[in-house]
Length: 259
Image (cartoon, rainbow, N blue to C red):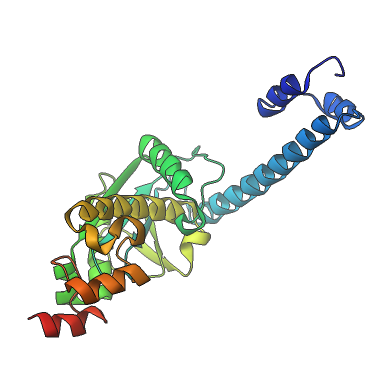
């Protein structure tokens, strides 16, 4: 391996084309650049192994609910219960048995780039998925918990397949067609729920990016409707917008002043 340049070794490591014997040989290479490359390679390898193990835990969790061969398991999660503005979005998804995307986990643990990669893979490879968007006016009329339940039920009903069991993140919902199970912190335990969390989060973030174009003063592109310092300052300066949740403090107090 000493006949290879550092740039060549870098490419071989990035492409994962070296055998264990060649890796051991590189460990005896006295060039500092080679040793630095090996450290980076080992860190990446360890991270991938950790992600692979985490993915398998999520997958095994769902498999315990398959009481019969071919049972259809759906996962449901929401995004946007806490923001001061915008909708609450829920997603329902059914994954194939051979689904695999190492690194996929609860949407809150992922970078925006990784979430988008996962979103594209899920939507391309899922057996079925559906999205429900419930607007701020409905949230104000029903309250956020009931609006969340509505969006979850709508997403489930929109699925073109009927699941045998539906795993739901934390919230208890009723369904006439299949059994639903509320899983506390389900987005960190279940592959189906984690996948649904990504679909819901990415969908809502993109909606908030669009709403930012209409109401740029509130900085929705960055805060996604949550009560950031800049968002709260804008509320005091400009008052609430039509997409703010009137029932949410501090918006409620501002609406009293505005109307």
